[in-house]
Each structure stands twice: as structure tokens, then as C-alpha cells.
Amino acid sequence: MIKNNKVTLALSSVAILMPVAVGLILWDKLPETMTVHWNAAGNGDGFASKAFAVFGMPIILLAFHWICIVFTDRDKKNKNQNPKLQKIVLWLCPVITWMISGMMYFAASVKETDIMTVLFLFLGLMFCVIGNYLPKCKQNFTMGIKIKWTLENEVNWNKTHRLGGIVWFICGLVMIAAAFLPLKISIPVMVTLIVVAVIVPAVYSYSLYRKMLKNGEITSENTVPWGGYSKKVIVIVSVIISLLLVFSLVVLPNTGNVDIICGETAVEINTDYWFDISVAYENIDGIALRDDVDFGRRTNGFGTPRLMLGTFMNEEFGTYTRYTYGKSKLCIVVEDDGNYLVIGCENDETTREIYNEIVAKIK
Image (cartoon, rainbow, N blue to C red):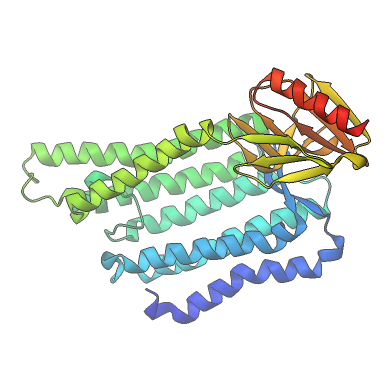
């Protein structure tokens, strides 16, 4: 794939970086903090610096683009893949990059934006395009509906993709129409359509497998288990996935600490998963011990059920910095030249002790 599409690959890579040029042109007009994520109601709930929005997002997507290309190229079954599908793989990330960057720049320039309508229209159009090309997708390991029964039998693959193409195209059309409905209606419709697009082809593939097995069209001898993957590869992939799930669901939410140390001239806040910071006692304008601080929403940083680290925004402080544990309510609010820092220990007793030490240092 790479060998036969070198020019297109180069052009698509340049295209991904084009929003950087647009960001540089608009640089002076863009705010220092930009919205990079929106919730289901269309309100911004994720924020980042202007530099990250302009430079970071395209660079991340460029890396993702190359990862997808390399994995697709290494799949031997894609050597004779439909050229049109290869073009879609090459241009999918550029289109997504333009879409994301366009939304960020538009939201930064126009106060009233209907982001969700634009997003749903784009999603519907993408479903229509994918649905149109699914029936043309030849059996492979990186593109298409890759489930056990399609990978084991080419007939199952072809029939499932023909049906899947119809389902995805229809779902895309309905998504485009639903984009203009009120959010309280369009969001459930969108979720339902995505579930339908995923479940219907999978159920059909399994029922087709059972039918072919019953009619003797296939047997355990003439199917290729998991598309030809060896047991060793399946075991390795399963172990990796299991480890990632354990890390994401068990280890990460229960590890990490916030260490608050009262030094001679400053209070030091050290963490395992985010930047360490310090505040000089002489710069502290005010300090309070409170159990009623609304954390608001995180705009940048790191969060798990155990830790709340980074930059947050609420109605009382506006943008502020928080280094606390997720379950503890009692925290120390430090004011430094109009900027607020909220810190806290794992239990209330330790938080009170740290608060008393800081108060003693600044007197």
C-alpha cells in the first residue's frame, strides 16, 4: 500500500498539517485557552492551550495516521485490496483533522456555535461513505467487519459486508436527518443508530455461520480459525488486551499519590501522574480550609476515581489548579495573586495538619 501510494501518502500527511498554517494565520485572534472537546449538550467541557490546539492536535493525528497506514500495509491480505478503499484509509485522518481543527477555530471565533449539528452531519456523511464501500472490501485483518465468523469464511465476509453496507448507508442517512432535531431527541437517535450499525451485521454473520454449518456448507475442517491467526498470536493479543484492561480498570484508578510537603520557603506538591508544583509562602495572599469547594470540570490534567489533578474551572474561582484525591471533600484553598490552588490529602486529618503547618509558615 505504501509503495503504490507514496505521492498520496505524502499529500495526505501534508494535508493533516495544513490546519497548523491556518492556526498561525489566526494566532493573534485565537484565545489562549481553546475548547477541544464538547459534551452531549454541545457545551465545551475540555480545554487546552492555544499552542496544543494549533500544533498538538494535528501532530497527534499525523502520528495516528501513520500507525494506521503501517498496520494496513503490513496486512498481506491488503495487497490486492480495492484501490478506492485504500484511498479512504489514506484520506480519513486528513478529513477528521480538518473537521476537528475547523470546529476548534470556529468555536474560538464565534460565541454561538451549533457544534453538535455539524458533528452529527459529519458522522452521518461518514457512515454513508463507509456503507457505500463496505461491500467492495475484500477479506483482510485491518479493514471492515472483522469478527470471528467473517474472518473464518470468505463467503460469510462477503455477505455480511453487503448487508453491512446497506445498514451503514441507511443509518448515515437517518443520522443526517436527525442532526436537525432537538438534542434531547437527536442524541438517543444517534446512539441507537450506532448500536444498530454494529449489532445487526454481527448478528447476521453469526446466523449465517450457523445456517452454513447446519447445511453442511462449512465444517470445522474447511474454515480457517480466526482468519488464519496462529494460536500463539491470539494468546499474545489476548494477554496484551487483558493487561491493558486490568491497568485501565483496576491499577490506574487505584494508584498514584498527592504528596504535600511544607518546606522552609515553599509548599511543594508532588504527584505521580502530573506536574509537580510549588508555592512560596511569601506569595500566599490567603488560605482557607473548606469542605464545600465545587470541583467544576477539568479542562486540562489527569483524573481517575482516586486523583483529581490539573486545571479546573468552576463558578467561584473561574480557572483554577487542583491537586486532590477524588473521594476527599476537605481541602485547602490557597490564593496567590488572584490565582487559586486547591490541594488536599487522602484523609481529613492529614489535610488539617498540612493546613496548620502552612498557616504557621506564612505568619
